[in-house]
Amino acid sequence: MNNRLSDLISVCQTLVKEGKKPSVGLVRSRAGGNVSIPEAIKGIQSWKAQPEQIIKTSEIPEQEQEPTDSLEKRVIKLEKQVHHLNQQLKAILSSAAK
Image (tube, rainbow, N blue to C red):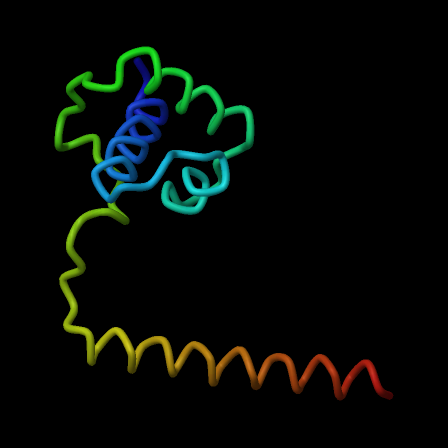
């Protein structure tokens, strides 16, 4: 089993533990990165075939691990990103208006 499939199965298991039914949309959003619809479907099918299979903890996607930054640091980082994106958007809109 490849790491990508293991990651998707792990995502399905996490969703079930949270009381949610794994769907293509949920799996794709939780897996992070570029997960195609066929990959998500294959992951869900593999999970359904063996819902209790053991996935090594080293194969759990990085997104599901606890963040190392405090919430305050993460908010500050996100605010900076939003500010930067707003500046880029203004520059694009002003150049398009010319």
